Image (cartoon, rainbow, N blue to C red; front, side, top):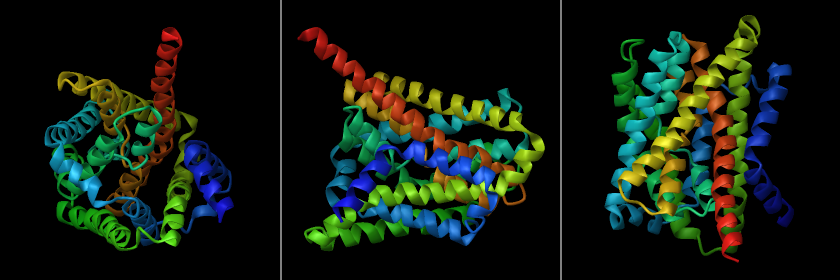
Length: 324
C-alpha cells in the first residue's frame, strides 16, 4: 500500500508529463482509447469529481461563508475573465466554428481541480484556492450553460437545460457523494489510505479522457496536418496565459496580498478542461474538432500551472537568499 501511495504522489507531481505521454502514445496507437467516448467518458469525469469530493470537508465549504469578499472576487474573475478572453480570441483569430466552440467551452467551465495543488506548491492561499474551486464548481451548472448561450449561441444552438442537468450529474452529484463519505468515514485509517491514492487516480482518469479525445480527433488531425495542432495550441496558450495575468491583476485591484494574488491567478487560468471535453463530446458531437482545444487544455494547463507555481516559489527562494 505504501508503494501505491508513493505512486499516487508521483503521478500527481508529474501529471503533465504522464498526460502528454498518454496523448503521444495514443496518437500513434489511436485504438488504445477508442473505448473512452460517450457515457464512458462521462462516468470517468464523474469519478474524477468523486475523488475531489472525497478530499473535501465541511471546513472547505465554510470558507465561502467566512471569506465572502475573497470568494466573490474570485468567482466574478473566473466567470468573466476566461469566457471574455475566449470570446475575444475566437473573433480576433477568426477561428472555425468547431475550434471556437471548444475554446469557448473551456473558458465557460469552472476552475480545475489541480489548481489547489498548484496553489500549495507556490506558497499561495490554499484555503482560498479550495474555496474558489468549490464556489465555481457549485455555480457551474448554471453559469456554464448561460455563458455558452451568450458567447456561442450564434455559432450553434445550445441545449442549456441539457447542459445544466449534465453538469449537475457529472460534477455536483459525485462531489456530494464524496463529501458525505468523507464526513462519515474520514477517521478510519483505511479511508485515509484511500484518500492518499486519489490524486494519482485522478491523473490516470484525466489521462484516459485525453486519450479518448486523441482517438476521436486522430483522423482529422492527420488529414489537416500539424498546422491544425499548432494553431489550436497557440489559441489555448494565449487563453491560459491571459487568464493567469488578468487573474493576478484582479487580485491586485481587489487589494489581495501576495499569497491570494498567486492563488486567484492560478484559479482563473487553470480550467476544468476535463469537464469541457465531456461537454463537447456530448453536446457538439456534430463538430468533432470542438474537443481538440479541450484536450490540449487538459495537458497544457497542468504544464503551465506547474511552471507558474515553480516561478512563484523560486521568487520566494531568491528573496530568502538575499535576506540571508
